[in-house]
Image (cartoon, rainbow, N blue to C red):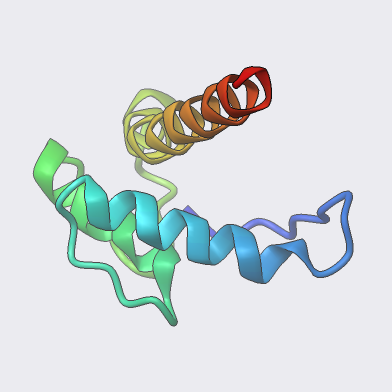
Length: 93
């Protein structure tokens, strides 16, 4: 899985999103280097039994790659929903 060239809708959001990913995955019990939060994918892959390696991973199936990304992205989405619900509840108070 090579790193994608993401463009965020809000300029400067990349740093905040990387910090958010690091914090969410830390809460999930992973050892995350805040300077390299994308490296958590290797720890997730190992846990799932997916042979992800740095460099080329052309031998991985789409399903295997999706397991890794789904675990990370799913955790981030759940946390974003929780935060949004909390903000809505705070507004109603």
